[in-house]
Image 1 (cartoon, one colour):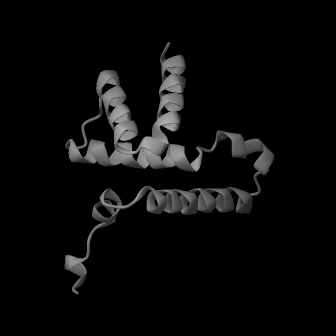
Image 2 (cartoon, one colour):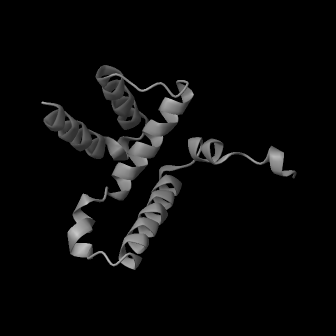
Image 3 (cartoon, helix red, strand yellow):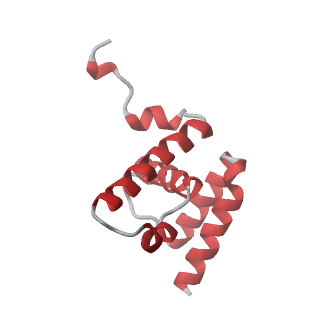
Length: 109
């Protein structure tokens, strides 16, 4: 298989199961934690500000939807619809999506 015929990371993620997406998000978060620890940061100072694995999965899926929409920044209404669609497409992420939407509303209001 030539390199040009390999599926892109985006193509692999799009068809990936939730378990694969969660594993990928977990790896990303572990990398962030390790980087910050190497920089001498105290985990008590930053761990609460990091997203959960499921929150990161939602942000990754949202980023895919934005890429598919020609990279246009979504309006607040479009963002809400995208996040709702993620919850509908991935029922185990529903409570995470609604928690995130509540936080976004609180920040905006």
